[in-house]
Image (cartoon, rainbow, N blue to C red; front, side, top):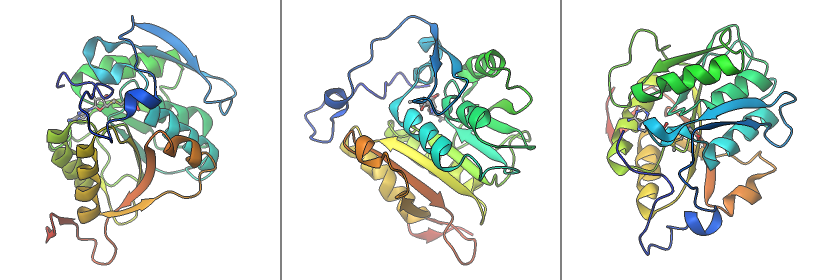
Length: 247
Ligand SMILES: C[S@@+](CC[C@H](N)C(=O)[O-])C[C@H]1O[C@@H](n2cnc3c(N)ncnc32)[C@H](O)[C@@H]1O
């Protein structure tokens, strides 16, 4: 994991607004906190945060937004769906879905790079969710390992846009995962102008639609957080990258 912090933009770019709207987070000591997502979870999650292995070791605003959206709008629409979270960090979104939505029997996969694996596993255990959730390594841009489900029905990704060299890797992994019936719920906070380039790349490759059924949207949009669905382009099931059809 590169040593870059999603809240650390320092330029004069007008889109570089994260610190003005969301207080800068201090690099805090490892610890545990309860998260109920504004009461949407009857039994709050207990989440360990530990920044030792990278920025995924703490909770990020787009993760909170996506988790709340799933709990509000998809509580009863995920039964029997195969669900996979990308860049899960400590597993905030996937664990919220496992805990508060009707899911399964397929397990929910929360994935990230190798250094995050122990934290994901700790948080699964802390919340007694090992029957429902499995932690796995999925490094964007690399070949999917055998333990990763192919073409999951639902992909979750929160706050995964902040490091430009990783944009094509994330696009490539989405291309590998998205089947004709898959949907990715994708939430990110625009911190700098470069983040918009991810959206441009994604729109060329996939069908990207802004979500408009979230009553909370007005609140988080003011903080430059946006929520989208990403699907493969309709028709042939082919995908386009940089305007080229790759099928
Ligand atoms: C800002 S954190 C967001 C964590 C969590 N989704 C949340 O919202 O709280 C971004 C996550 O993306 C992961 N990540 C960054 N580059 C990655 C890559 N190339 N492959 C897989 N995960 C990556 C990081 O390890 C980190 O956990």
